[in-house]
Amino acid sequence: MDLWNKALTGIQAQVEPWDFAHWIKPVVCDVVDEARGEIVLAVPDESHGQWLEEHFASYIRKELSRLGGSELRIRYTTYENRQGPLLAMTAPEEPARALASSPAMPAIEVLEPIEPPNLNERYRFESFVDGPTNQFAMSAARAVADHPGTRYNPLFIFGGVGLGKTHLLHAIGHAVREKNPRARVRYVTSEQFVNDLIQAIRSDKMQGFRQRYRDRCDVLLIDDIQFIAGKDRTQEEFFHLFNTLHSSAKQIVMTCDQLPQSIPDMEDRLRSRLTWGLTADIKPPGFETRVAILKAKADLEGIDLADDVAMLVARHITQNVRQLEGALLKLVASQKLMHRPIDLDMAHQALGAMLGETLTRIMPDAILKAVVAEFKVSLTDLKGPRRHRNITVPRQIAMYLIRELTDVSLPQIGQLFGGRDHSTVINSLKRVEAMRDANPEVRTQLDRLRRMVRDGA
Ligand code: ADP
Ligand code: MG
Picture 1 (cartoon, helix red, strand yellow):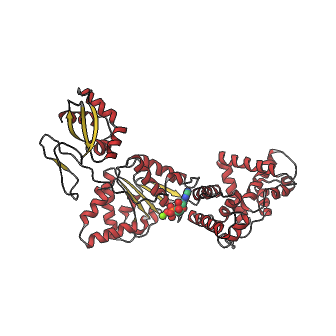
Picture 2 (picture 1 turned 90 degrees about the vertical axis):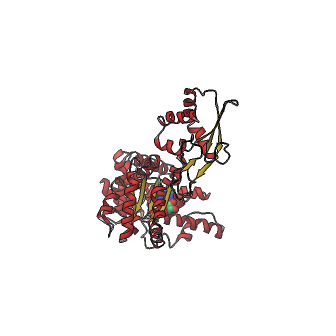
Picture 3 (picture 1 turned 90 degrees about the horizontal axis):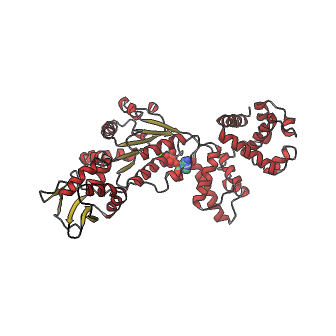
């Protein structure tokens, strides 16, 4: 036993304090069996043993051999199966601590079982499609998941409805747990938080409430924090919770539909804390990202979504990713009901109302007009054979926008531009995609043109 206690000191000096507390400290030396040449270490459960073997075995071996135990084989057993003195565990309500019955044993902390967090399986970083309007929020979320409690604390994600805030929050939870299965991740909506608090006050169980949120929580994920506006008692409790977690380097992530400054009826001292760390916004995704999201979701559903259909949907549903998903589900359902493959025609029929009949049909002419105005070229040149760069770039951009904003087919686009064939059109589209990806100015210019077309300017 002494051997292990000495080894502990050596190991402690080499591993992160958090790892030490969670992984090494709970290990109890069961027996040192010189005759068999093994040291038996008791751990809370089998997965704990596996984790130790994978991540910390080298430290343990090094220390043991430094202390002259190099011949010893390490074997793991569970608390339950250990042979040594029994552990007397105190009631779980107490800060989990187990007392060794033998005076030679140091008091050890027994890890409480980790309740699995209520996270949606589908909301993971892997299934989140990033684009210019949500990239910052996603990178921030990833950074937080990689280094909880150290970097951006709190992380405050804000944006409109259906743009992926909840998705990112769950993704953080999953990623933290993947890196560290014993991390205690707590996800709640602020409504649940309020209800939980009311319940605790009513039944006089505030101590339990505080334990749940303060002591038994390494990462707190609170969704839609705006709902605590106007609720003084909740704000008061949350304020103290925030301070406790923050000062003990526990990670807090919140989402909101607006900036803290604009949440009404919020205490100033709390409002200011919400922006102590990093604030990241999510805006509606641009056209390309919307197409990519549709394609990714279709992949998940196991269906092959043609480009033109994805573009049709992405063109009409612009403000909310949940609606994009809704449209896709409708297509999948129609495919089954109507026994028809998902093509443009079917999509028009199935989605009719959803695609917004109010939306005026954008005609290629409006796009040509906008491009002519933006680049100061003549319509004749734009449609004609000239191949000077001053003309070819605007021409390619016009083709690209016609493809994006209208239902005109590739051969028809070729026709519009003096009978060019459809492979030329495809090449032009690729050129613009490359320019767009490489050059932010091109993206700005495309956005400006889209606006001109929409506003009929
Ligand atoms: P919010 O919480 O911002 O209202 P959600 O996170 O609930 O939005 O997102 C609504 C739906 O859209 C979810 O099913 C989510 O998976 C999906 N979603 C939103 N943004 C993305 C994205 N960038 N990539 C993939 N799916 C997304
Ligand atoms: Mg949400």
